[in-house]
Image (cartoon, rainbow, N blue to C red):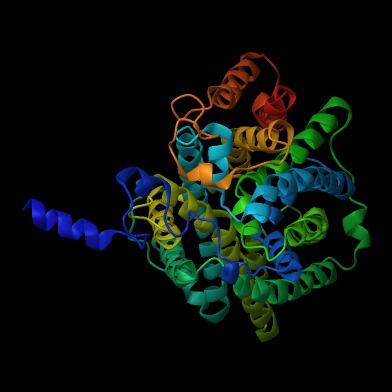
Amino acid sequence: MHERLSAILRKLEVAHEPGLTQTQLFLRNEDLLPVPPERRTWKAWNFIAFWIADSFNINTWMIVSSMIINGLSWWQAWICVWLGYGCVAPILVLNARPGAIHHITFPVVARSSFGIWGSLWTTLNRGATACVWYGVQAWIGGTCVLVMLRSIWPSIEHLHNSLPPSSGTNTRDMLCFVLFWLVSLPAIYLPLHKVRHLFTAKAIVVPIAGLVFFIWAIVKAKGVGPIIHQPGTLHGSKLAWAMLSGFGSCMSNMATLIVNAPDFASRARTPSAAVWPQFLGIPLGFSIVSFVGIIVASSSQVIYGEAIWSPIDLLGRFLDGHPSGATRFGVWFISASFILAQLGTNISANSVSAGCDLTSLFPRFINIRRGGYIAAIVGFAICPWNLLKSSSLFTTYLSGYSVFLSSIAGVMVTEYWLNRRGHVRVTDLYTTRRDGWYWYTWGFNFRRVSFFFSGFLSERCVYSIKFPDLSLYSIFILVSIELMLPISLGF
């Protein structure tokens, strides 16, 4: 029996170098070692295409639309976008640098900051949040599938529901979620150095669909004038706090991409390819897409008398009544493009992240591909539709989600740039020798770990303050504290 179990375990093992000890098997496999030259295929254009593709996703639209719903005017919301993503870009580039220089992924880079064993806590946190976020993005992708199917077969809107009310959803929406989930599985199979082709396709198709939607919304609103002349409804301190909340929402939207920046930078052909394309591409790409989202969300107020925060819901309204064939085709094209957008976003921000993290936790049995499939399964199991019932729930989720990741990024940037001055001894990232640079104390850098846990203490302090509507503003407060505290104490 023992021999049979051992044989099964050997078959489940991923490819690794022969003759490794048990400790070495826990620290290295093909996906944890530095990327070989033949797989360093990402050029500057690939990073540009990546950020063009990643900025065009439903989540970006929903965040900026929620600012409009919360009372900001279009130009106030756009200022929040520029400031938020403008602050994110340099932090992401700084965190991506060790990946671009040494061609190592986030879990390995984290060992230099938290210690050989201390890094496992950070990868567990990020892996868990990536799995949850995978489910959220897949559910949003399912809403795109529903609108696309409605444009072809309108009767699907009235599909009989066989699920109980306690499920929180219905048969129609669950069917569309499952379809998107299944379509995503082949994309997870692609190796990281080849998945760039998916982002190139997305960078071509989705902006065209976004432009079509933008023009269509303006035409239905009878020009851009009625849209841009809508005033904001907030003034004084309420306006200031709402803008801070919008600024923080943009930063929270990028939390996972800041942390997993070394994953994609490790595939850069040259270190410079991961610098300016990201430094400029992030604020430009997300600001342009957010402007489209602002105009589209504001147009819904003119067209229907109410602000619709989800572009997919707005497309669904276009299909109400008796739409023409041209309307149905337009909705089909835009919703199909949004399916591609959500697919690419889920791969870049969640599947790859979870795959890299789970690889570091169980390198003997899990690689990036297997980890991506595990994320898909977990994302299905967490019932993501319950997180997207309203814009307030969505914003609250972003707030809690960013708490973990922002503190990790702050510690990593501090360690690499302030303490190590950019010096990394790559061989010591794969050893438990007591004289290794990253062994610290029993494999833990307790100083950096304490900075990470200081985030939880700061969170408790913030929530202990009796301040009106604190849950709305906690995104800005918590992200700022958690990101800047490790940096300010890094010396």
